[in-house]
Image 1 (spheres, rainbow over the protein chains, first blue to last red):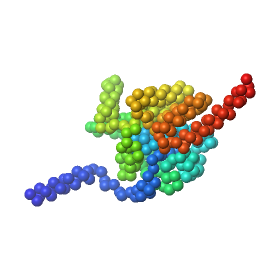
Image 2: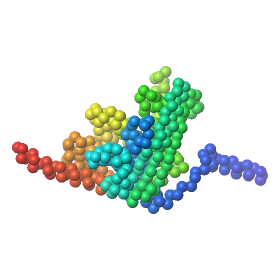
Image 3: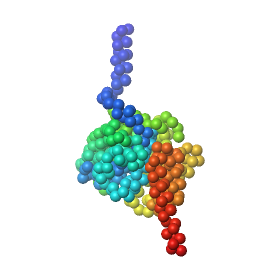
Length: 213
Length: 128
Protein backbone atom coordinates (compact mmCIF):
# COMPACT_ATOMS: atom_id res chain seq x y z
CA UNK A 1 0.00 0.00 0.00
CA UNK A 2 2.79 2.35 0.94
CA UNK A 3 4.57 1.43 -2.21
CA UNK A 4 1.49 2.18 -4.17
CA UNK A 5 1.19 5.58 -2.55
CA UNK A 6 4.80 6.37 -3.26
CA UNK A 7 4.32 5.35 -6.86
CA UNK A 8 1.17 7.46 -7.15
CA UNK A 9 2.89 10.44 -5.61
CA UNK A 10 5.87 10.21 -7.88
CA UNK A 11 3.57 9.84 -10.83
CA UNK A 12 1.63 12.94 -9.81
CA UNK A 13 4.84 14.87 -9.38
CA UNK A 14 5.94 13.77 -12.81
CA UNK A 15 2.62 14.93 -14.16
CA UNK A 16 2.86 18.26 -12.43
CA UNK A 17 6.38 19.01 -13.52
CA UNK A 18 5.76 17.41 -16.88
CA UNK A 19 8.20 17.82 -19.67
CA UNK A 20 8.74 21.52 -19.00
CA UNK A 21 11.68 22.63 -16.96
CA UNK A 22 10.60 24.38 -13.79
CA UNK A 23 10.38 28.14 -14.36
CA UNK A 24 13.11 30.21 -12.87
CA UNK A 25 11.77 32.64 -10.32
CA UNK A 26 11.43 36.10 -11.78
CA UNK A 27 11.25 39.21 -9.67
CA UNK A 28 7.92 40.80 -10.50
CA UNK A 29 8.10 43.52 -7.83
CA UNK A 30 8.96 46.34 -10.27
CA UNK A 31 6.24 45.23 -12.65
CA UNK A 32 3.67 44.91 -9.89
CA UNK A 33 4.58 48.31 -8.48
CA UNK A 34 4.03 49.92 -11.90
CA UNK A 35 0.90 47.83 -12.56
CA UNK A 36 0.53 49.11 -16.13
CA UNK A 37 -2.87 49.26 -17.85
CA UNK A 38 -1.54 50.43 -21.18
CA UNK A 39 1.45 49.60 -23.38
CA UNK A 40 3.01 51.87 -25.97
CA UNK A 41 4.57 49.63 -28.62
CA UNK A 42 7.40 51.43 -30.36
CA UNK A 43 8.68 50.72 -33.87
CA UNK A 44 10.84 47.58 -33.79
CA UNK A 45 14.58 48.13 -33.71
CA UNK A 46 16.72 46.03 -36.00
CA UNK A 47 20.25 45.29 -34.83
CA UNK A 48 21.03 42.84 -37.60
CA UNK A 49 21.81 43.09 -41.28
CA UNK A 50 19.71 40.03 -42.01
CA UNK A 51 16.21 41.31 -41.59
CA UNK A 52 15.38 44.14 -43.90
CA UNK A 53 11.94 44.54 -42.50
CA UNK A 54 11.61 45.44 -38.81
CA UNK A 55 8.49 47.30 -39.88
CA UNK A 56 6.73 44.04 -40.67
CA UNK A 57 7.41 42.81 -37.16
CA UNK A 58 5.50 45.79 -35.78
CA UNK A 59 2.26 44.42 -37.25
CA UNK A 60 2.46 41.30 -35.03
CA UNK A 61 2.64 42.99 -31.61
CA UNK A 62 -0.76 44.58 -31.01
CA UNK A 63 -2.84 41.41 -30.98
CA UNK A 64 -0.95 39.30 -28.41
CA UNK A 65 -0.75 42.24 -25.99
CA UNK A 66 -4.38 43.22 -26.52
CA UNK A 67 -5.37 39.61 -25.94
CA UNK A 68 -3.44 39.69 -22.64
CA UNK A 69 -5.87 42.39 -21.53
CA UNK A 70 -3.81 45.54 -22.00
CA UNK A 71 -4.71 48.74 -23.77
CA UNK A 72 -2.31 48.74 -26.70
CA UNK A 73 -1.69 52.08 -28.34
CA UNK A 74 -2.51 52.04 -32.08
CA UNK A 75 0.83 50.94 -33.53
CA UNK A 76 0.44 52.56 -36.94
CA UNK A 77 -0.89 55.82 -35.50
CA UNK A 78 2.05 55.95 -33.08
CA UNK A 79 4.43 55.34 -35.99
CA UNK A 80 2.82 58.09 -38.08
CA UNK A 81 2.95 60.59 -35.20
CA UNK A 82 6.61 59.80 -34.50
CA UNK A 83 7.43 60.21 -38.18
CA UNK A 84 5.69 63.59 -38.21
CA UNK A 85 8.05 64.55 -35.41
CA UNK A 86 10.92 63.53 -37.68
CA UNK A 87 11.57 60.24 -35.88
CA UNK A 88 11.89 57.60 -38.58
CA UNK A 89 14.44 55.34 -36.93
CA UNK A 90 13.90 53.05 -33.97
CA UNK A 91 17.22 54.30 -32.62
CA UNK A 92 16.12 57.95 -32.72
CA UNK A 93 12.87 57.07 -30.97
CA UNK A 94 14.72 55.14 -28.27
CA UNK A 95 17.02 58.11 -27.70
CA UNK A 96 14.03 60.15 -26.49
CA UNK A 97 13.86 57.98 -23.41
CA UNK A 98 10.96 56.07 -21.92
CA UNK A 99 9.89 58.90 -19.63
CA UNK A 100 9.35 61.44 -22.42
CA UNK A 101 7.76 58.84 -24.69
CA UNK A 102 5.34 57.72 -21.99
CA UNK A 103 4.53 61.33 -21.22
CA UNK A 104 4.03 62.25 -24.88
CA UNK A 105 1.44 59.52 -25.38
CA UNK A 106 0.08 59.24 -21.84
CA UNK A 107 1.22 55.62 -21.62
CA UNK A 108 1.75 53.57 -18.45
CA UNK A 109 4.53 51.55 -20.06
CA UNK A 110 6.73 51.54 -23.13
CA UNK A 111 7.71 48.37 -25.00
CA UNK A 112 10.92 48.12 -26.99
CA UNK A 113 11.37 45.16 -29.29
CA UNK A 114 14.80 44.61 -30.79
CA UNK A 115 15.82 41.99 -33.31
CA UNK A 116 19.35 40.99 -32.34
CA UNK A 117 19.78 38.02 -34.62
CA UNK A 118 17.95 36.63 -37.60
CA UNK A 119 20.12 34.19 -39.49
CA UNK A 120 18.84 31.85 -42.10
CA UNK A 121 21.21 29.21 -43.33
CA UNK A 122 19.75 28.01 -46.55
CA UNK A 123 20.38 24.43 -47.53
CA UNK A 124 18.74 22.04 -49.90
CA UNK A 125 17.19 19.75 -47.32
CA UNK A 126 16.81 21.77 -44.18
CA UNK A 127 17.05 25.48 -43.68
CA UNK A 128 17.95 26.54 -40.17
CA UNK A 129 16.87 29.85 -38.78
CA UNK A 130 18.19 31.33 -35.58
CA UNK A 131 16.40 34.33 -34.16
CA UNK A 132 17.11 36.34 -31.06
CA UNK A 133 14.54 38.90 -30.07
CA UNK A 134 14.73 41.14 -27.05
CA UNK A 135 11.66 42.55 -25.36
CA UNK A 136 12.01 45.37 -22.84
CA UNK A 137 9.23 47.10 -20.94
CA UNK A 138 9.76 50.36 -19.06
CA UNK A 139 7.34 52.16 -16.81
CA UNK A 140 6.48 55.84 -17.24
CA UNK A 141 9.36 56.83 -14.94
CA UNK A 142 11.82 55.01 -17.16
CA UNK A 143 12.36 52.03 -14.85
CA UNK A 144 12.78 48.66 -16.52
CA UNK A 145 9.87 46.56 -15.23
CA UNK A 146 10.12 43.47 -17.45
CA UNK A 147 12.40 41.97 -20.03
CA UNK A 148 12.64 38.79 -21.95
CA UNK A 149 15.09 37.47 -24.50
CA UNK A 150 13.68 34.87 -26.86
CA UNK A 151 16.20 32.78 -28.75
CA UNK A 152 14.82 30.25 -31.17
CA UNK A 153 16.64 27.78 -33.30
CA UNK A 154 14.39 26.58 -35.97
CA UNK A 155 15.07 23.69 -38.30
CA UNK A 156 12.03 22.49 -40.15
CA UNK A 157 11.53 18.77 -39.91
CA UNK A 158 11.22 16.79 -43.08
CA UNK A 159 9.15 14.10 -41.40
CA UNK A 160 5.72 14.45 -39.93
CA UNK A 161 5.72 14.98 -36.20
CA UNK A 162 2.45 13.07 -35.88
CA UNK A 163 0.73 16.23 -34.73
CA UNK A 164 -1.08 17.78 -37.69
CA UNK A 165 -1.23 21.23 -36.13
CA UNK A 166 2.49 21.24 -35.35
CA UNK A 167 3.16 20.11 -38.91
CA UNK A 168 1.04 22.92 -40.29
CA UNK A 169 2.77 25.53 -38.18
CA UNK A 170 6.10 24.06 -39.27
CA UNK A 171 4.96 24.18 -42.88
CA UNK A 172 3.98 27.82 -42.50
CA UNK A 173 7.36 28.66 -41.04
CA UNK A 174 9.17 26.73 -43.75
CA UNK A 175 7.13 28.53 -46.37
CA UNK A 176 7.85 31.80 -44.62
CA UNK A 177 11.60 31.52 -44.63
CA UNK A 178 12.00 30.76 -48.29
CA UNK A 179 14.56 32.99 -49.84
CA UNK A 180 12.41 34.21 -52.72
CA UNK A 181 9.87 36.05 -50.63
CA UNK A 182 10.56 35.76 -46.94
CA UNK A 183 7.64 36.13 -44.57
CA UNK A 184 8.83 37.00 -41.07
CA UNK A 185 5.40 36.82 -39.54
CA UNK A 186 5.12 33.16 -38.39
CA UNK A 187 8.47 33.20 -36.60
CA UNK A 188 7.76 36.61 -35.11
CA UNK A 189 4.37 35.38 -33.86
CA UNK A 190 6.03 32.39 -32.27
CA UNK A 191 8.62 34.57 -30.53
CA UNK A 192 5.89 36.95 -29.30
CA UNK A 193 3.88 34.06 -27.99
CA UNK A 194 6.86 32.71 -26.07
CA UNK A 195 7.64 36.12 -24.60
CA UNK A 196 4.12 37.22 -23.65
CA UNK A 197 2.10 34.05 -23.15
CA UNK A 198 3.92 30.75 -22.69
CA UNK A 199 7.45 31.58 -21.53
CA UNK A 200 8.84 31.48 -18.00
CA UNK A 201 8.39 35.24 -17.79
CA UNK A 202 5.02 35.43 -19.51
CA UNK A 203 3.38 38.77 -18.79
CA UNK A 204 0.71 38.87 -16.08
CA UNK A 205 -2.77 39.58 -17.38
CA UNK A 206 -3.74 43.17 -18.02
CA UNK A 207 -6.79 44.98 -16.63
CA UNK A 208 -9.16 43.88 -19.41
CA UNK A 209 -8.25 40.20 -19.21
CA UNK A 210 -11.21 39.22 -17.08
CA UNK A 211 -13.46 42.09 -18.01
CA UNK A 212 -15.64 41.81 -21.05
CA UNK A 213 -15.71 45.01 -23.02
CA UNK B 1 -3.10 17.48 -53.66
CA UNK B 2 -2.68 21.16 -53.17
CA UNK B 3 -6.41 21.40 -52.77
CA UNK B 4 -6.51 18.73 -50.12
CA UNK B 5 -3.76 20.47 -48.21
CA UNK B 6 -5.76 23.70 -48.28
CA UNK B 7 -8.90 21.97 -47.03
CA UNK B 8 -6.99 20.36 -44.18
CA UNK B 9 -5.36 23.69 -43.35
CA UNK B 10 -8.69 25.48 -43.20
CA UNK B 11 -10.27 22.69 -41.15
CA UNK B 12 -7.45 22.66 -38.64
CA UNK B 13 -7.37 26.45 -38.49
CA UNK B 14 -11.13 26.51 -37.94
CA UNK B 15 -11.00 23.94 -35.17
CA UNK B 16 -8.07 25.82 -33.68
CA UNK B 17 -10.03 29.06 -33.48
CA UNK B 18 -13.38 27.62 -32.48
CA UNK B 19 -11.86 25.07 -30.12
CA UNK B 20 -9.70 25.71 -27.13
CA UNK B 21 -8.47 29.12 -28.24
CA UNK B 22 -10.99 31.92 -28.17
CA UNK B 23 -9.83 35.44 -28.72
CA UNK B 24 -10.82 38.18 -26.37
CA UNK B 25 -11.28 40.78 -29.07
CA UNK B 26 -12.56 40.58 -32.62
CA UNK B 27 -9.48 41.71 -34.58
CA UNK B 28 -10.71 40.66 -38.00
CA UNK B 29 -7.75 40.55 -40.38
CA UNK B 30 -6.07 43.61 -38.90
CA UNK B 31 -2.67 41.96 -38.51
CA UNK B 32 -2.55 40.50 -42.03
CA UNK B 33 -3.83 43.69 -43.64
CA UNK B 34 -1.38 45.86 -41.69
CA UNK B 35 1.45 43.52 -42.69
CA UNK B 36 0.56 43.59 -46.38
CA UNK B 37 0.18 47.37 -46.23
CA UNK B 38 3.66 47.71 -44.72
CA UNK B 39 5.02 45.30 -47.28
CA UNK B 40 3.63 47.30 -50.18
CA UNK B 41 2.35 50.70 -49.03
CA UNK B 42 0.18 51.35 -52.08
CA UNK B 43 -3.17 53.19 -52.09
CA UNK B 44 -4.83 49.84 -52.88
CA UNK B 45 -3.33 48.07 -49.86
CA UNK B 46 -4.18 51.05 -47.67
CA UNK B 47 -7.78 50.91 -48.90
CA UNK B 48 -7.95 47.20 -48.07
CA UNK B 49 -6.78 47.89 -44.53
CA UNK B 50 -9.27 50.75 -44.16
CA UNK B 51 -12.10 48.54 -45.48
CA UNK B 52 -11.10 45.76 -43.09
CA UNK B 53 -11.27 48.17 -40.15
CA UNK B 54 -14.70 49.43 -41.27
CA UNK B 55 -15.96 45.84 -41.48
CA UNK B 56 -14.66 45.13 -37.98
CA UNK B 57 -16.50 48.19 -36.64
CA UNK B 58 -19.72 47.13 -38.38
CA UNK B 59 -19.42 43.63 -36.89
CA UNK B 60 -18.57 44.68 -33.33
CA UNK B 61 -21.02 47.57 -33.17
CA UNK B 62 -23.79 45.25 -34.31
CA UNK B 63 -22.95 42.97 -31.38
CA UNK B 64 -22.82 45.90 -29.01
CA UNK B 65 -19.15 45.38 -28.16
CA UNK B 66 -16.26 47.75 -28.70
CA UNK B 67 -13.61 46.95 -31.32
CA UNK B 68 -10.12 46.02 -30.05
CA UNK B 69 -7.86 48.70 -28.54
CA UNK B 70 -6.41 51.10 -31.09
CA UNK B 71 -8.52 50.28 -34.12
CA UNK B 72 -10.77 53.36 -34.05
CA UNK B 73 -7.64 55.48 -33.79
CA UNK B 74 -5.93 53.65 -36.68
CA UNK B 75 -8.97 54.39 -38.83
CA UNK B 76 -8.94 58.03 -37.70
CA UNK B 77 -5.30 58.34 -38.74
CA UNK B 78 -6.04 57.24 -42.31
CA UNK B 79 -8.81 59.87 -42.45
CA UNK B 80 -6.33 62.39 -41.05
CA UNK B 81 -3.80 61.52 -43.77
CA UNK B 82 -6.47 61.94 -46.42
CA UNK B 83 -7.20 65.42 -45.06
CA UNK B 84 -10.61 64.56 -43.63
CA UNK B 85 -9.94 66.21 -40.28
CA UNK B 86 -13.56 66.43 -38.99
CA UNK B 87 -14.12 62.69 -39.39
CA UNK B 88 -10.66 61.88 -38.05
CA UNK B 89 -11.72 63.73 -34.88
CA UNK B 90 -14.90 61.64 -34.72
CA UNK B 91 -12.86 58.42 -34.69
CA UNK B 92 -10.27 59.71 -32.21
CA UNK B 93 -13.20 60.61 -29.96
CA UNK B 94 -14.60 57.09 -30.36
CA UNK B 95 -11.24 55.61 -29.35
CA UNK B 96 -11.18 57.86 -26.29
CA UNK B 97 -14.72 56.88 -25.29
CA UNK B 98 -14.03 53.18 -25.74
CA UNK B 99 -10.60 53.13 -24.04
CA UNK B 100 -9.95 55.75 -21.33
CA UNK B 101 -6.21 54.86 -21.37
CA UNK B 102 -6.00 56.59 -24.75
CA UNK B 103 -7.48 59.89 -23.50
CA UNK B 104 -4.29 61.93 -23.33
CA UNK B 105 -3.04 60.83 -26.76
CA UNK B 106 -6.45 61.26 -28.40
CA UNK B 107 -6.94 64.70 -26.82
CA UNK B 108 -3.63 65.87 -28.24
CA UNK B 109 -4.48 64.53 -31.72
CA UNK B 110 -7.95 66.12 -31.56
CA UNK B 111 -6.63 69.51 -30.48
CA UNK B 112 -3.97 69.45 -33.23
CA UNK B 113 -6.62 68.70 -35.85
CA UNK B 114 -9.02 71.27 -34.41
CA UNK B 115 -6.31 73.91 -34.70
CA UNK B 116 -5.72 72.97 -38.32
CA UNK B 117 -9.44 73.20 -39.05
CA UNK B 118 -9.63 76.59 -37.34
CA UNK B 119 -6.63 77.85 -39.29
CA UNK B 120 -7.95 76.47 -42.55
CA UNK B 121 -11.30 78.18 -42.59
CA UNK B 122 -10.19 81.81 -42.73
CA UNK B 123 -7.72 80.93 -45.53
CA UNK B 124 -10.54 79.39 -47.53
CA UNK B 125 -12.71 82.42 -46.99
CA UNK B 126 -9.87 84.72 -48.05
CA UNK B 127 -9.51 82.86 -51.31
CA UNK B 128 -13.15 83.12 -52.16
